[in-house]
Length: 264
Image 1 (cartoon, helix red, strand yellow):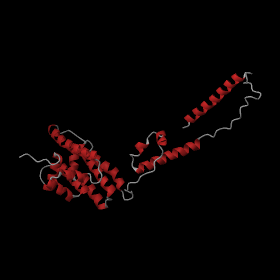
Image 2 (image 1 turned 135 degrees about the vertical axis):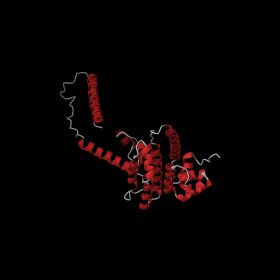
Image 3 (image 1 turned 30 degrees about the vertical axis):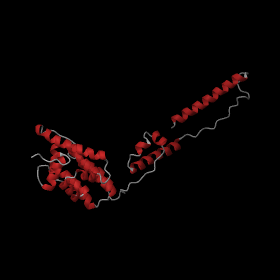
Image 4 (image 1 turned 120 degrees about the vertical axis):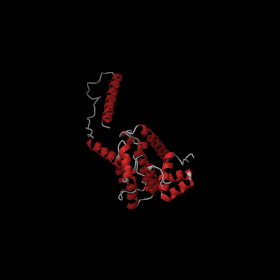
């Protein structure tokens, strides 16, 4: 009898291993366990029992996860099953796909935490399921290019979930387009940053601007040119004198522009 595939082979194996305690899909079951920490075990159990793929998609996007991130998650799980087949003929083969699947879980969890602040117990439970299963540690040691990749990523992302960090989405104050362009970026790129990064960037730019103003040399007072009084520049011809004066003014103006350009 042909096996009924629910969503894809990876998730079919994972659901069966976690809820039915069948099969050899230890890593796949581990991923389902972490999804339960994020979306709720009862919601996932019902979806699995009813084989409702649409409900699964809606659940994964519940906290605002972008559709392309969900699609990427499915692609990675498909690649994992392909890797398992390839490793049968080449047991020394290594991959980063297992760590990248777990990275997707971290992203999903952070999306959840932006809307629902986790308790210390919930945070600890997810971390333990994600990192401390001895069987999963062994799998990473055997197949992963960097067995500690997920642990290293989680250590960085966990700082965002510290009790002292406000997880409410804050809209920062942006500087003008010209200022960002002057310092090698653009308003469009800055708007993609986390608000804390924007604040740090703005602070850096303002400090640089203040330093530039402080170091800007004061313009020296220039003596007025006495062109028409006892000047040796006069040719005796009014039209020629006019051209000469115009060339002096143009030269002064060009020097000023060059000075300003070099000190921007």
